[in-house]
Structure formats: C-alpha cells, structure tokens
Length: 108
Ligand code: FES
Image 1 (spheres, rainbow, N blue to C red):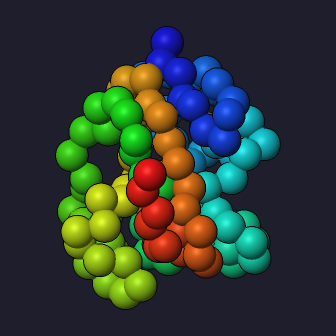
Image 2 (tube, rainbow, N blue to C red):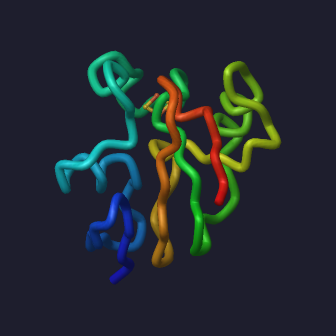
C-alpha cells in the first residue's frame, strides 16, 4: 500500500488511486486559495492542481498533462505534475508550491 507524504501527513493510498482525489479524501488539497473552489475538477485543464513529486516514482506524465504544463503560468521545465492526472504506483513525497497554480517553485 503506497503512502503519500503531504504537508507533514502520511496518507495511505492504493495502487492506481488518483493523487488529487487521494489528497481531497484525506481533507488535504493540491489547490491553493480560491483554486480549491475554482478548478476543472480533475480534467487536466486548469493546471491548479500542480504539485512537485519530491520523491518516489510518479510514472510518465500523460499527454494531457504534458500539454497543460506547457501553458503559462507553468513551463515544461518546472518539474511539476498535475495531481489529477497522476495514478499512484509508489510511495510519494508531494509538495505544493505557492501561487494560484502552485507555479512558484521554490526548491531548497
Ligand atoms: S484539477 Fe484542473 S488540471 Fe488538475
């Protein structure tokens, strides 16, 4: 059973679970501020569920994910992933960055 580490909490998941939904089910959110309410509800279009996978195998991004992450305010080299497009297959350490889209990547 994979574990998702997010905001100091360990969240149990099943292989194949959607990362965004797993966080929401645990009463955590991959969205910042008002993006918690104004988002595309997991359709890979708004880009507000972007997170960094700090550790763990997140697999390859989907075509939809790749496409959305090329569009501003994201950039293809940000290293971010769309949590709504990501199926959990491994223990993951997940970090949300600041900004409406989580686009202000601050790495330690
Ligand atoms: S919720 Fe909109 S792209 Fe993920």
